[in-house]
Length: 279
Length: 279
Image 1 (cartoon, rainbow over the protein chains, first blue to last red):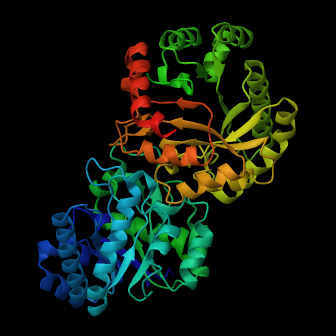
Image 2 (spheres, rainbow over the protein chains, first blue to last red):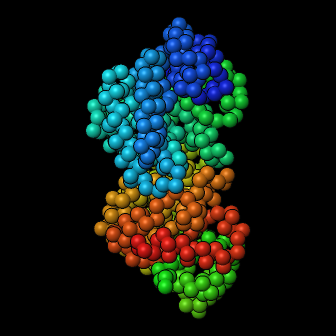
Image 3 (tube, rainbow over the protein chains, first blue to last red):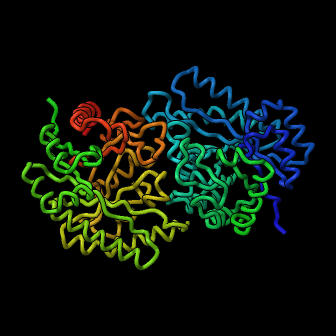
């Protein structure tokens, strides 16, 4: 029999489901944890979301997502800080320690990546005391370089660890999402580094499909459908000491159009085949 | 008056033009060098291509391209070596020292990037003596990570330099193409490293357009149309000691559909505005 005790459904995988439907889907499938996106939490209402997840006996593996910290103007920066503080309170209310941050890309018309990265660092320093106070760990997620300009100017795990370095590992850590980092020639060593620095805080699995989807954000695929070597990367994550939840987060129109229960069933099969034996 | 003495047209920018048309276009535009693609050289015939470029008074800044070195089977490896030896002879005949290599992605159905990268290294070692004998320098070009699976498992300049390290800098060097590397958080330091290692052998300029084109290969744009900070990257290349040709290589359907002479005029304007003052 397979062991799904570490499996978690990131709610984006079943995008059409409300939080209620996703919670019920996890219970039906025997998946013990969920990583909700904030839009579905807001829709349900924060307190009701926390209550329904708890009542269903599910753990919250993470909250997606805060971030977008690159604004160059004072208003944009204040808005980003306010939204991230709200996300920190939401993570606390939902009973998860881990808040994913997608750090943000270039402001419109701006091309200075060096300055934008410095602003990420500055905003992070402003957020950390608040996160610490609320027992929330900020997870820096490197995104695939094809999203550098419009989503995240943190593109490698090494860069995320460098950005995290000034902060306590209990406050700022990193996430490994196979889709975003599989291509990185330094991946093995940076996963190991994340482990020994005590910052390897979350592991998301999702394949990289080819050809790249017309909407490049939707190139994420079910494990086994793309080019990623899950046994190898998963063993690196294991060898770095990671023993936490493994979230499945897939943005893919075909999967979104499919029946959610079938998606969860496929997810469990592929997890059993490609991930679990190496985790 | 602007100085176009370092400007070179990569023939892919005016994809519809034959080599003859591209050569004539460069002469009309006062562009002193060309970087031809092999398909257009073959079409013209190697000797005739060399003759017509020489007769027009143009320099050949590089030849595009060899590579695709990741085959796992003996036949595929032999075919790759044969094709690359042919490309080396073509570079020699055309009077250019520099042959671009796009190293290749994963063989169909293969997911082992570590082993595929080791094969790139092995094939390179087999090619270097032949290249050396013919006075041709093999240029490792890191490609954007969105092409890692199907085009090139060398994705960063640092990785290209590591791969080049066992070989003499006169035989194996690296190319910087802004489109492929602009996002790299280690770019400044790796360009500097390429300089002090004597391996910074070619500089190609081309913008990164958003949204990513439906055919992801065609997201390359005219300098100034996308997100890349040409002044900054060009100054890093200059500070690393690079004083060679600057090739414009753009794959973009709209540009391909446009009049070639107009494309060259725009190229000269944008080069003058964004690149030359910092080169």
